[in-house]
Image (cartoon, rainbow, N blue to C red):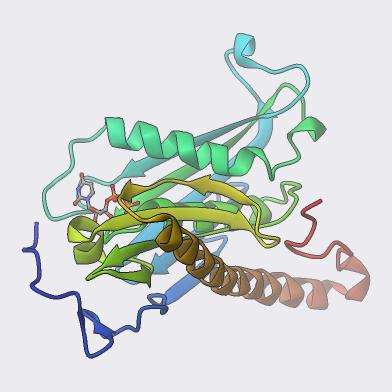
Length: 256
Ligand code: UDP
């Protein structure tokens, strides 16, 4: 693990040169996997994440089926080589927790009642980690679900906010995440409905509301990139197949 820096912010700039309300660069590639129903490769700073979605497909064993809705399953996994110290393969308390909160982030948005007895499976593979992998995973999963054509209320967009050197900052890098005063990963719909919120560390009530406001700004920026990636891929494909093939639904604004 790296050492705790003496200062996180010097002359208004963070350790990697960003301002307090700036995201790390995000790169999105849709459908990189041939065998998944939907997939997304996402880079966020030095994080590298692959998301694959399968389904809706019959859920086995059958006693786990829900007669009234689809079951959303989410598996977050870190590759052994994704961090400096090799990670032991298999489940850990951390991966079980992140898988649970990842699933919860999508329960509300996926129209599960359309597909009783089935499962929608979301797999997140962290290939390289540098803080913020749970939020990067949620962003990639959201796009992989859309890529698989799973009906949803809208996209889910996520980012972390936190506190370093007494200031509220957007999108924590590794040193800020590991040694900062607070880390608050948040996911929300385009309409601002929060589907995931965790908090590590301490914030006053005022700081918490300031952090929420900054998270909304961050999630809006992520949402624009997600939407752009979908439009670039599918507008191109629909243009080739003729205008009539373009679906009428709008992306990410069906909150109610
Ligand atoms: N990390 C690590 N080894 C681990 C778990 C995490 O090196 O076993 C690093 C990794 O870079 C990760 C960061 O610590 O992204 C922060 O981890 P955290 O549990 O806060 O989750 P994240 O911020 O990735 O969602």
